[in-house]
Image: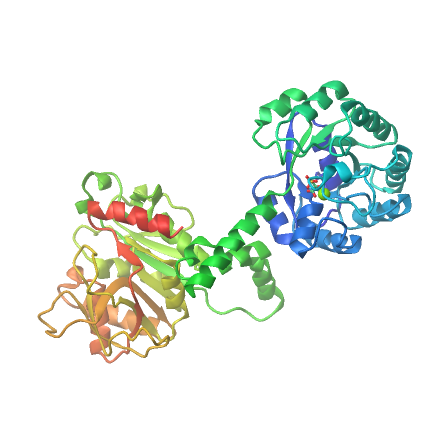
Length: 550
Ligand code: SPV
Ligand code: MG
């Protein structure tokens, strides 16, 4: 995103100035690279604090000017490129004397940075929370010269120079802090950042009272975090900086994940709790590149469509489905169908067709196409599937709307080879699933030591009379069709339509018809990690399952 003055949009510097000058209390959040900056903007913040501590930490070095100022400016360019909100750089001491400050301001403006905060310490500085008593302060005159040099170098009149007073950090009193703030504003500073390392806000409140808003006051409540924001509002503070919370959040998350994977030699219990790869793509703006590719390069492959069979009421769920179909029953506060759609989106399946029936009007999930099987009461799954035939695509996943599953099952299905692939749970013996089981007889049992198993479906259904041998697992209610599979599926549907009992047929009948006609139907084995919602008892189980999959 560029920082040009586009019609009606104020420059970033003007927006930072407005945040600082506005009479209300405003908040900005730390970011330390492109992706964290983007996340901060998405969260709704109106500005970013490019923290020296966080920037140095993400490089893995100390907050002692070990990273060079050009390395900082380079990172800022990544941050401005992917955001549109103003960035205030924590410019430490200005990385040198007045001359370094002049060059810094020019470079920051060139990169779309809205302002810089400099502190009255000596280069190279030390973080304010380390050994504060030994932190020498700059001479007031020298620091004022630096402020003047910065202000005289800016091209955009809105570019902000915030002067940070470290007197309280260095063990000086309120009088010294006010004396310095006064001089810095006189030299041209647009605001004063008053810093304190106490666990209570007493110092900054005393400063604000004494200061009486001679210029806007900015604070960093890292140490006195338990103070309610109302206290700052009452004290007349202009801007609060949450100075390090993105880097701290990422450190905790990375430590947990690294320790877990190191211990378990598997990611299976983590996958659904960490951002999926598609979320990275989204934050990187991969969609835009795909659009551009369509415009400028050769066309991309076919998109995957999901067809969700969701016509039934689920009358075993009693009162829960008086006014809505089973797919709209909330599980852990979110309707089943919403959960499904979210899972699809995570895996890049953005086209979703829902075949509704019972109380179809109550389906209010965004981002899906709804097709109604108006004869849902008298017909079965195959009739519902036939209703969606006009939306069939070259690559599609067909599934029951009452399914909950770990994300990797869908991912593995999408990645699996074969024109028609069904997901079969081989953990038959331990299954506690309700409803009538769709047992699966397959060419080979699940060999869990193999990743790519070449297994074909032989029969599916609950009719153990047809096959007297032990089934190899249970079809979970999900299949994928791609390549030539779509034409075979459509042909099988047309053939079955001729049968008088078509209205009573289910998806297993379709699969058995395909197998009988010689169509290879591949099996993707899984081992648990899914459930379907049929009975009231399932709701609680599903809630726990969903919570574990967050
Ligand atoms: C920073 O975020 O780098 C700051 C604030 O300067 S503090 O770490 O509190 O000094
Ligand atoms: Mg800093």
